[in-house]
Length: 238
Image (cartoon, rainbow, N blue to C red; front, top):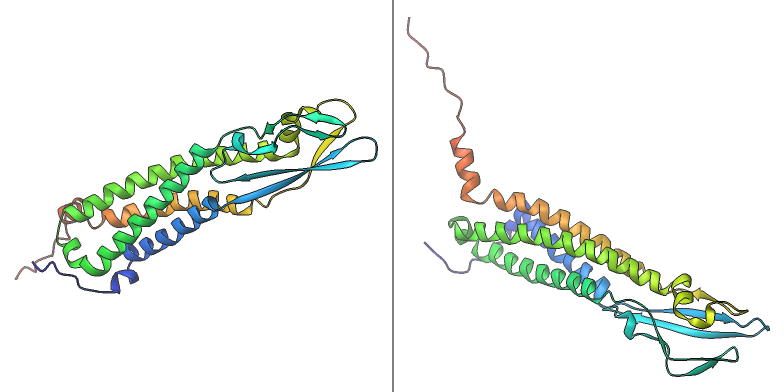
């Protein structure tokens, strides 16, 4: 059996190859829209005497909010001393898990495309390739479900920590008295919302991919060959 590299673009015209290309692209969108995020919320302190002062709540991937300073060092706001204060929460495990799964899927899709385009003659004539492809694809469907669900909760924690209510709970100066605090300018979280959409989209795409990979395994071929065919009617002579 010939095992050398044979470049053939035709697998991209079939569901097995085309869906791998889609998975490669959606994985890029998933980790790109989450892993490169940086945002800033502007917090305005209304002192009650006509003066306003401003704080900046910066946060970025991997969203270790407890390491993001809201007040760095002792400072005076509205004639009151405020000690060092950080944002509350830590969504790093969910964010890093999500990006990690996306990177693994990106790399696996790239390797699978190389196999499909150059070694499809080996892939189709062996049991090992399709079975490994099927098992890995099924595992990745499960990982997309888990990491996207975890990231959904982590993203909500990021939003809760950086909105007006979260800032008020974090800053003691905002609790009681004549001083009020509001987030007057919010970071654009559109890319993070998109990352979550791409996470669940990847889960569905990889789920569909499982079926097309399964069709390449011996289990499907045996099932198909074991189905009773139509019995041809033999004409009888009179």
